[in-house]
Amino acid sequence: MADGTLKVGTITTSSGSGTITLGQSGETISIPSGVSQSGLGITEADMWRLTADVTADTSPISSNWERVDESSFGKIGTGMSVSSGYWTFPSTGLYLVLGISQITAVSDSLNFKIMVTTNNSTYDEYAYVNTQISSGTIRCNNSTSAFVNVTDTSNVKVAFYITGNDGSSTLHGNSDKSETVVNFIRLGDSV
Image 1 (spheres, one colour):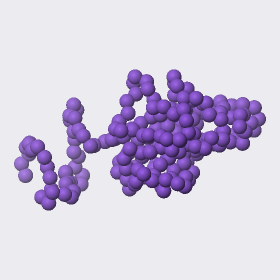
Image 2 (image 1 turned 180 degrees about the vertical axis):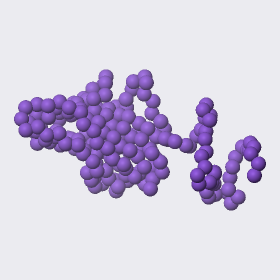
Image 3 (image 1 turned 135 degrees about the vertical axis):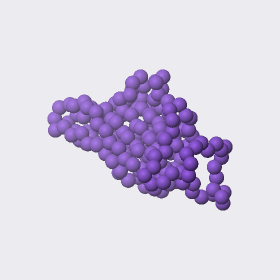
Image 4 (image 1 turned 180 degrees about the horizontal axis):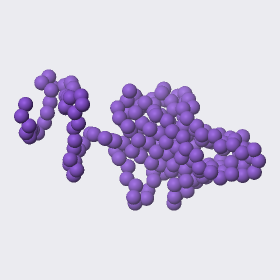
């Protein structure tokens, strides 16, 4: 087949639905710099932060969330929504959920957890990070993450919990800077 340029407005299958294959195994399809594309790459990315301190035990963390509002931030897509601490995904897909927590632990074992439900009812512990101090006080940052396979946006949801043995330990929040943040990135289609 001769090399050349194919100029078309729309490519469809002969049946009107199904799979269209571009290239073959071992070939690379490139998109030149400056070309706009739609529907490829990351279609959802969002970042929220806690605006005020929360003490353990708070399950779920149900208030004081805001979408990061710095001028350099811009979400991709529709973005997440939250109600009473339960987070709804904007579309199906495989999501990376990342929680970064800034905490002060006081003679305590403190856990920051990502909880997931697939039936909009029972939440299971998917990931958590533990900070433990036998005496005194420590302030530190921790992170935990999970892949969440969102097959149904009405039933698959996440929540964030903070649990500990001593009610004086704190998960930090601030409306002017991100101390405790949660990130949601859609990596691709659900599996």
